[in-house]
Length: 90
Image 1 (tube, rainbow, N blue to C red):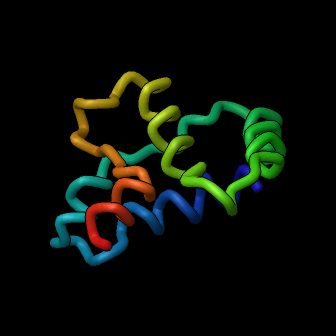
Image 2: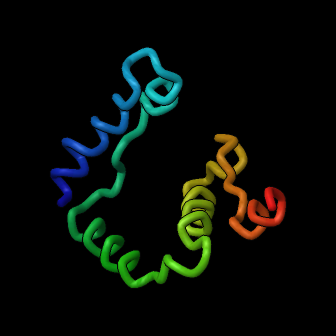
């Protein structure tokens, strides 16, 4: 799993949308920084136990991880919770 993510998934993510796309521009420096296969396996196992169907857990997890890598607010990437989106657009 570690080799696939490192050698295939991240290069694929960096190239999505073509070389001249805005996405590729922002992803050009994306790096897979989980240092060991054992740590990646542990992260995947822990995430597999998180219930993700009834709430906006994926968005909560995304913001938590942004905060952990100290980029929250700097990259301008924030999510809007589903209950606010539903209220606003309904």
